[in-house]
Amino acid sequence: MQEKRGFWGSRVSFIMAVVGSAVGLGNVWRFPYICYENGGGAFLIPFVVAMLTAGIPLMILEFGLGHKMGLAAPMAFAEIRKKYEWLGWFAVLVGLMVMTYYGVIMGWCFRYLAYSINLQWGADPATFFNQDFLHLSSGIGDLGGIVWYILLGLFLCWACVFFCIIKGVDSVGKVVMLTVPVPVAILVIFIIRGVTLPGAVDGLAYYLTPDFSKLLEPKVWLAAYGQVFFSLSIGFGVMIAYASFLPRDSDITNNAVISSLSDAGISFMSGFAVFSALGYLAHTTGGSVSNVLNHGPGLAFVTFPTIINNLPFWASAFGLLFFMLLLTLGIDSAFSLVEAGVAGAIDKWKTPRVIVNGIVSFAAFIIGVIYTTNAGLYWLDIIDYYFTSYGLALVGILECIVLGYVYGTRRIREHVNKTSDFKIGIWWDICIKYITPAMLIWMFIQTARELISNPYSGYPAWAQCVGGWGLLIFMIVFAIVLSLFKSRDGKEI
Ligand code: PFF
Image (cartoon, rainbow, N blue to C red):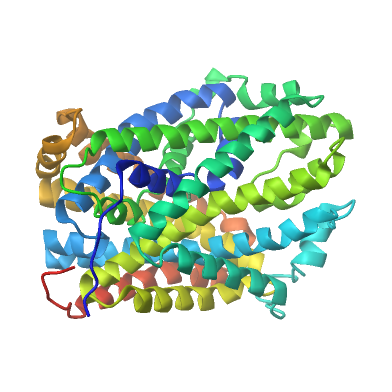
């Protein structure tokens, strides 16, 4: 039996799915912090420039490629030339590797949802998180044992992902109607709660006071481009796969602009929720906002529980809402990464969806077991660092070269313009051929230089290799191997 591809039920479900993938944990725990670190309100200038010169153009490029070929990343690249198929697989594998730890973070959220009921993290959420919850070991090489409830959480996450994509775009289109508006509504609740707390104004001043001198620092611009790539979920094959399910006459440019701006807007909004709460925490502890500033898992599992402890009323309700927020933010980003791989494999081998979905989900679940050990947080940290900086930059650079120079931007531009209201011009070719690759190459070199002078987070060399370079090289080899397998021919895909 061959698998039918199908199409999005409506334009809205496509846009919702794209926004669902783009809007994830990064909007809440990455953007506000990066904004604060890189000039506060002034950061919005490089951010908007990065959005216009790289984010939206790349989104149009990925949409255009997926839509033109009607295929997910691997076979879409194979259509350009067989020898580039591996690049599609590489993008998908990098995304799947990201998903292996995204799933664990969601697993933590399930558990913290239960903890919220009686604020079980107690008066010292930091000790609770590291010792009582993660049972963090002394170092990355000391795996210790598996923490069973984290494993259970991981399994639960994968079960959700499996069912969300069980019918491809049909089921995804329905799920995102819930998982996109719900976190936005919760964010609004948090903003209202946050800004009405004492100290909120100080927090917001921290977030937004512009420091225009920062605009002269190259690293600020680099941060803006990095954040835009990651936030829009570009470079993991997701947008190529999603656009491949668009009907022939769909508008590409408008969809790309709407989705990108929605993502940017939600990032900016999140900053209000996060920094007003941080302002309140600084106010209650009598310190300054910089003392309580945090990002990543530390913000979600240590700082926020502390803030929730201090709320004047309904603390556990806000706890529940907060972890619901993270879960609903994360789930549609998570399954988009898996769908990119599943759709790619179905295109190539025409295997029934449930089988591919089952194999991919199970394999990625097994890989994720490493993060459920006592050294899990270290592995998560190192793999996140390498894959979202190098992995993403590498795919982006190669994508711009293959599509910009080998295939030619003109062909994609003409295709996009055929069905889009707003016509893109030569400026778009310039963004794809020069500006975006230049920024990505710069990002790549800069991170490499930093790493050479100062190994990431002081992890030992063997761990940097296993969790970083070695794993990335393995992914490239694996991608090449996948591309060498024979595909199953057949018209109906
Ligand atoms: N865009 C997501 C975020 O900002 O949290 C992260 C992400 C999800 C990146 C899915 C890539 C992806 F394919």
